[in-house]
Length: 354
Ligand code: CP3
Image (cartoon, rainbow, N blue to C red):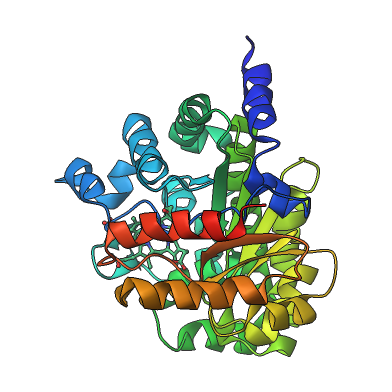
């Protein structure tokens, strides 16, 4: 079989999965479930295979990426796999000196502050991340009818890491650049949009069935500023992958005031954190979009009966939605009991079986 038809076969096998049907707002046999950060430190089998291997090194080893991506699918029976990688992988791949520090996050050696720094952001080519192509091909062959979600960081969230030099609570350097030199800012996020779009295309062309754009820190912005200074760049990413028959998910944290704009940027599915109930989120997003979310990840530390009660609340608020993908409101916390996650998947499947 040619490579092209092999990718098509992967997507065809997953086409009628509950996850892709929900993204397309079609009827489903049960509400599909997956978790952001489902592959990761909550799993002992993850900690075991990652022993002695740095995060970014692990992303460049297709066999390991395949194993880690499959671990939560095997264990939890989730309805989709999410590609094991990181939002900073494409930046590393074009030569930006950065590392992921355990317990901290991405740290950039020389933060971006001036026009001269733009020169360090060259376009991403498929050959820069051939290990991603290889891993996605291996994965889609293994996954069969289970869809694979590819992802990228959105321009604002990537810019925040580059400009701050690491994780930041207030994003003050980022905002200083954004408001102080909007022209340079716009060029920066435009280049990042091209890089994110290229990273998504690599995953789609290798066989990913859906993509999620993570704008984790966009909630730090007021809607008017988001619309003017950030949304055009994120819309460029979504436009670049609009020609593929692949649902596009848009997610951020603390984005209650931005939900309408997250949809408007070009998403088919809007991710919602736990601060806004899904029925209210649906009003803010408007018709024609599916929603994803939104159990508070910290709820999983409560006793099982409380987790079930909070899950019922989410499902009740989702009842009138055209398309609902169950997820947490943000990533799985590292100390989460994996059994609580397995039970949650089973519980949602049971409660929503039609
Ligand atoms: O299972 C999955 O969701 C797929 C894998 C995935 C990772 N990072 C693996 C990872 C995904 C989708 C991401 C995206 C990502 N990376 C985001 C957006 C999602 C979000 O949480 O808002 C962000 C902001 C990053 C940047 C980043 N990378 C952070 C903040 C951290 C955590 C640092 C820490 O140690 O607490 C990372 C590291 C990282 N990315 C880990 C994993 C499994 C843990 C580090 C390790 O195992 O050494």
